[in-house]
Image (cartoon, rainbow, N blue to C red):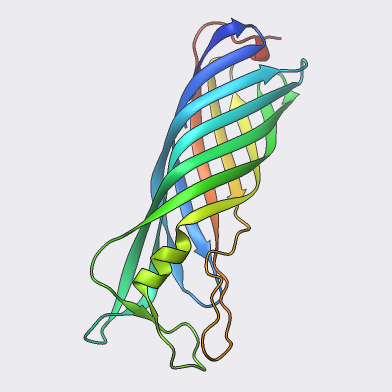
Length: 209
């Protein structure tokens, strides 16, 4: 994420824009997945509350891609199935400086709306080895679309002008609240590692010593 911030209101109110990258994956006992990369970009609004503490609010367009393994096509061949989810994301963070201006920690919360997009032909999953019930990729896409939310934690380091950031977003929503005809339930949640670089225009009061 690259944030370009200016003192729009005063030295304690900052606007900016951001660009970055997400490494996203699903967590599940029933489905096997591998992570995928996506972009993240939007606007940033920051309020300074003290010499050590800032409040950050971000609104962004976010891509969260991953690949589901061990799917089966019409010919019963084992294939991989890529899922690309795109949507809007809000992050609220406390930016607390341990060493001004070089190092800060960023606990917070996020909320995201995903719109999952199917790619390729319909495939099928049999995540329950004790059941013959199959789940189609269309069913999976319908379940993945919707809201996700959860806590996040980040670290930011650098100079007054350039910041290097890394964050971990832990989704707690179960994407796949599904009970099959064998009374078998499924759980599918998501997590994101977010990398960013921040560049500030002008004198950032937050980072002044």
